[in-house]
Amino acid sequence: MSVGSGLHRARSFMVLATGLYRLSHLVAGAVAVVQHQRDSALSWLGLGVAVTSSLLVFGRARTRGWFGAWPPGVDAVLVGCCLPFAVLAGGIDGPQGLSWAMLLGGSASAVCAVAFVPVAAVGAAVAALTATHAVGYLLAGADVAVLAAHLNALVWSAVLARVFWWYLRRQGQLLDTATAQALAAEAERARYAERIAHHRDLHDTVLATLTAIASGRADADALPVRERCAREAAYLRRLVQRHASEDDAPGVAAALERAVRSAESLGLRVTAQYQNLQDIPGPAAAALGSALTEALNNVLRHAGTRRAWVTASGHPGGLSVSVVDRGPGFDPLSVPAGRGLASSVRARMREAGGAVEVDSAPGEGTRIALRWPA
Image (cartoon, rainbow, N blue to C red; front, side, top):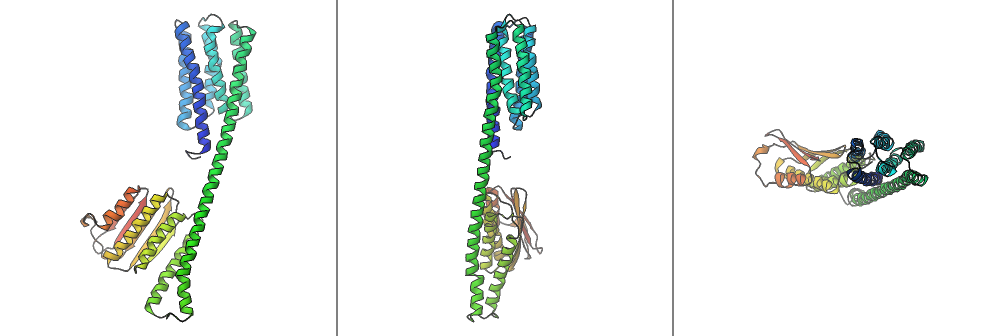
């Protein structure tokens, strides 16, 4: 489940709602103890236990994303079932002095209704709370109307919390399903657009070349024609390689392919391999494509060779691209600031949250590694 999913938001809302419900009962309890039971050590102790249990239940739910089973169960036993008898043992006078402890049972039943998955577990928790609260109020001398009103509120706190959680959970799941369908549709549209672009490229390149050779308008033995055929054969190999895996990311693949085709159009022979390309954010894909373009341009300008090797491989959450040439190499520390490597390659990757590594030495060729994220 992703952080921003509908189910996550439904859980966050229920944690907040039940937490506020508990907070209202704690405030009422604090006021009652301060005003009427300040001399009762057991009342102060019970209020402290209620606060501590609340911090455990809701603090844990906030940090972990949900309640779990045992914290609400412990809270129901301590705050819901034991607290009223502790207050009674402190010597309170009449059912009015017990009411703040009884209130906390309502929020305990609401938390159990949300946190426990089986309906039977919720029913058992509410039954235990109802029985102990009935005994507590009877021991305090409450009349039937007070007892019935409180037990009614206790039960309906659980019922309403369960219904709210069921509805929000269902809406969150529907939202997640709709989001997944929208993302799948968008990915399919991107793949379709890429296929159309490839069809146009094939028509303008490979098909045009073959047609010219077949019609006799181009000499298949001429050096320019052979070079063009070699470039287009390399393009076809990359195209087959990219579509061999269903995990390819259209945006990333298109950005890398544009960089390779741009270098090939300037006369550089590029051998490229794409392996398990991962879907990454658009700005990062664009930065990788632009940095690769400039890295290949550097091969053309400075390496003194017409050949380069490009390897792009995905890893969980990211992508790595390497450019290798067998030119004379150089000392990376001696490159003046402001040249293409610093301003166009490093700067682009750094701004997108990526990194660049340069491995080169005089007479050893050059390897430039682009990595996202850094």
